[in-house]
Each structure stands twice: as C-alpha cells, then as structure tokens.
Image (tube, rainbow, N blue to C red; front, side):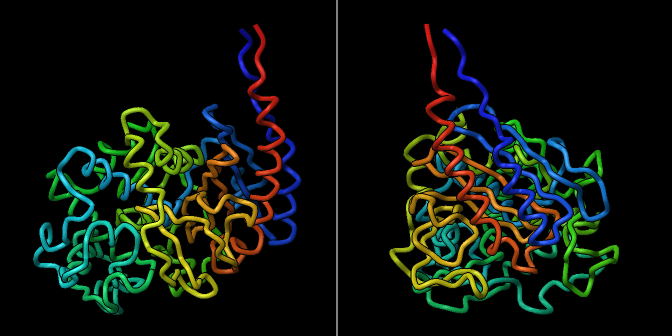
Length: 369
C-alpha cells in the first residue's frame, strides 16, 4: 500500500507574504498538521534583528504556555491526584482567592473571578524578581468578581494552578512541566532555563522596558522567570503539539474523556474575554483552550468550526485546532500583539489554511493497494 503523500504548504506562502507586506512584518512562520500526519513548517523572512526564521527556530510563545500548564493539571486529574471540582481552598488554603466557587475547573476556564494580572506593586518587575516571588504574589491576589459570573482571562489563575502542580509533584514548575508535558510529547521546550541557541527576537514591543535587558519576551531576565502563564520557549512544532494534545491523539498524555471535557465550553454562555477589542457577549472557554464560538473580532478564522479551539500569545502567535477541518496550526510572527496585527491578519491566514486543508485532505489520504 502506498503511503499518503505529504501535503504541500507552498500554496500558503502567498498568505504569509501578504501579512509581511500589510503589517510591515520582518518574518512569519507556520507549522501545520493535517490529520494525524507529521507537522510541516513554512518560514518566510527573518526575526526583528535579521536572523532567518527556520523550522528549528525557538520562539517565546507567550500565553500558549497556558496550554502546557493546563495539560499538567489535567494529567494530574487523570492520575487521580486532583479533581476538576476540587476547591482552591483544598489545595491552597492560604490563597486570598480560596473562596466558595473557586475550583480548579473555574481556574482553568477563567471563570474564578480573578483579575487579568497581578496588581501593580504586587511583584515589581525589576532585577531580582523570581518565579517564587511571583507565586507568592499570586497567593495574595483576592477575587475581583463573584466566581461563575464572568469570563476574565487571567494570568493569576495559571499562577495558582502552577503552585498546585508544584505541591502535588514536589518539583519546581519547570521540572514538573518537563516531566508531565514536554518530555511525553517530545517537545523541545525551555521554561526558566536559557535555551542552547538564541531564540527568535520579537519586534514591536511597547513597554517601559523595550530595548533594555528586561525586555518582555526577548531578554534572559524574562526567560528566567519561568512564567506558567507565558514563559515557555519552544519550536513551532512544539507549540503545535500542545494544542494537538487536547485532541486525544497523543498516546499516553490524556484520554478521550478528559480531552472531550477540556474542549467543551465550561462557561455556560457567560460574557467576557481578554482586553478590548477581545471582549464578547459570550466567551466560550474549555479547560485551558479557548473555543472559537461565534466571537468577533478574533484571531481564529470566521470559517473555523465553533467547537475549534486553541490559544493566542502576546508575542504574536496563535495555536489552533479545527476538528471539523481535521487540521491544526501554529502561526508566529516576528512582531508582538500590540499593533493589533494578530486580530487583523491572522484570520485571513486561517481562512486560506482551512481552504487548503479541505482541498488537500482527500488527496493526502488517497492510497492504493
């Protein structure tokens, strides 16, 4: 029997080039997995300092890291060491957010009532900051809403979940994440450790620390923080493997039942979102991944199935999986999200990719005896 031919990504190059032109983007890279076939990559251009993007390039994937943290929690749930409806008080009784209704399920789906981020001054962003100090700050953050009333995307929730993972495993977060997620998935990834080769440099960062040794995403200082909500450095295919793990196709990671639960809307139709303009009347969220639903504007394509899922990252990336089109992708540009390019241009790339997947699937799966 002839093996299915490898799908050709060349047809997607014009879409990537169009983003480079319209967004003044130095480079953009894409990894795609059609069905159960191995992922392929397409890289166009360079990073913000002129280094050519390549399949082996290491990217700071920002909030796509949250998928890895969620997978670690879900693996402990499946092992019987945690339960989704465990209260936060059961595991972190000293946490200021340990109030009735705050469960692991609520933390994973951003419905716990926590704020977007740590309050100003809770853990000053300066030399000497560590993950331990950030973890302690997460424990001090109170709720800003009643649990189960609004979807407020939050960095604090993954921070609390990371502390729970550490206590359950007796390991620092980076080691636990490696053992529970990265190694089983065969991912080259670094959290809190300096990678063996220079990561991609992201441009367009707008902050007080831009261009300094504390710069978000690009500095050794940032990478050393081991942020459970945004500090992972990995390859395109590594980030892609994180979203694919929720499909149940990665043997030995998660079973089909917990994958189905993780990719089901947990919010009951609540409103909410991230920051404007990504605030919606209904904000469907699973146990880690966001669901497409019918939200607009969005960085996933309008044509994606409503039950498709994934996560975006402020470093300029999105990892997404559409079960109906049988395709998953990871897109990363060399420009941060501040300019709005992810919402303006990612949907167009996604639409082209879905059309490509629908055309490729019958030919790629064709076999003969």
